[in-house]
Image 1 (cartoon, helix red, strand yellow):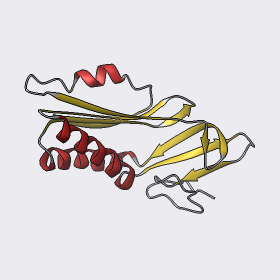
Image 2 (cartoon, one colour; image 1 turned 180 degrees about the vertical axis):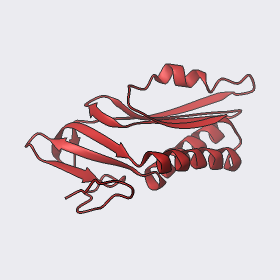
Image 3 (tube, one colour; image 1 turned 90 degrees about the vertical axis):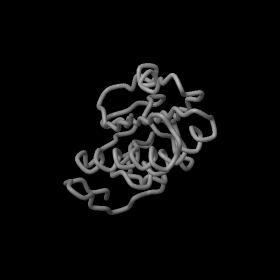
Length: 155
């Protein structure tokens, strides 16, 4: 079983983890990405995540499907927040269950890396000095970018 979703409310990690239960599973590995109070030496006050929802959900589902085919796992799930997030909020959650821990660890890491690389989700950091800036998924400044399917511009 796999599922990917963009959500505009807090992620309930405990509830999501229950979707991974399987009597044959001997391991469950989760990843939680939290909003931190700094980036590249700048104090961060909050984040805004935006996504090209139709493409993001389709690509997220494809990544989880690929993970299920690539690794011997029982289930995989991923939720990513959109909208305004505060320091300490859970921004992204990935969970994987498998018969053995190695497969669960490998699949979980592969999934979050692919989500960051392939899914059109953009992060706007709001800094303590009053400025804000759009970032690439790797955390570097985006500069002037026109996002597909959106009127957003990171200038």
